[in-house]
Each structure stands twice: as C-alpha cells, then as structure tokens.
Image (cartoon, rainbow, N blue to C red; front, side):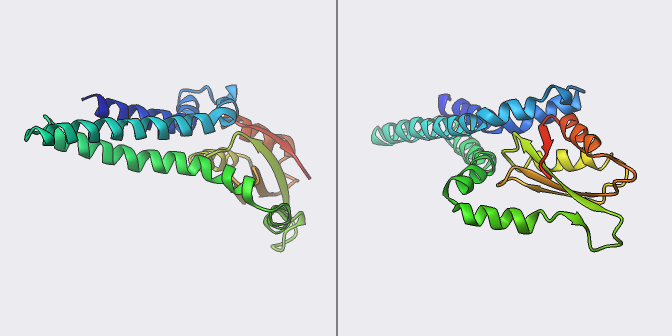
Length: 202
C-alpha cells in the first residue's frame, strides 16, 4: 500500500541526519565530517519526514473512508495502520530530537542562553583535586540525541578525559580533562573523528 511505503520513507528521511553519521563512523569514514555537513541541512530532513508522514496518513485515511463508504474494507488495513503508527513514533523521536534544540535556540532569550552557557560551562580548575581543567568546544552539526553518545565515546578515547557534557542547545561540549596528559588539539581531533567540526572557545 502506498501509505505504508510513504510511512517508512518518512522514517528514513527523519533519521537520516542521525543514522548516516553513525553509519559513516562504523565503516571508518567518521573523519569526513558527515555529521557537520548533515547538521546544516538536518532540519530539512526532519521537516521532510514529518511532511511525508502527514501525506501517508492522508492517503491511508482517505482510502479507508472510501472503502467504508462502499461497505468494504482495505486489504492489509491492520498491517498498514500498525506500520504507520510505528513510523509516527520513530519520526516524532528523530524529528523531535533534531528540531527541539533549534526551536529552543530560536525562542530562548539571549540572557537565558548566556546564563546556561556560564553555568553549564565553567572554566578553569575543577573542584576535584585541581589537576583537571574544563575546556569548552564549539561543535558544528549536533542536531539530535544520537550525536551525544558518539561524541562522548570518541572523547573517552583521549587520555585523562574525566567527563564530557554535550549541550545540544548551545552546540557546545564541555570537557573535563588533565592538561598534563592531553592537549586541546587532541580533544578537537576526537570530536572530528566522530564526524563533527569543532573548535576551542576558551
């Protein structure tokens, strides 16, 4: 049924900006920066997925209405309804996680963003032991929740990195590490290995 195929196409579109960078990393192409490339157009994939999903539901409901008017049924109606329901959940998850940070940035006041930046990304020595410092990286292309574990996993391979906090709203990663064992350049390279462009902001 056409609506079922459209439903799965909507999932593919909405998940493209999340799944493609992860797939590139898995096959060893993380360094090509696919995450930052798709991050710039990810909103269009998300909106496209939502639009295709709406069209899928429109076709399905129209066909069902016609069939019921003729006292008939649709072949595979339950399967199509189940497929569209699953597609709806997946599209909302993928598109929602991609669009939410952009909407927050668009509607949050500049003061709120500044306060979040100050409280979420303290600089200088940490409170634990004094040996670790916090470095903030500006990362381009982080648009959904799927970006977070990949960036954290890549940073965990750098010696002495104790923590990495990813802020999708501000497009930053705050890293706590020991500067005697790792350099800011190593942190940037680790983020780039995950497929995203990064630069030190402090």
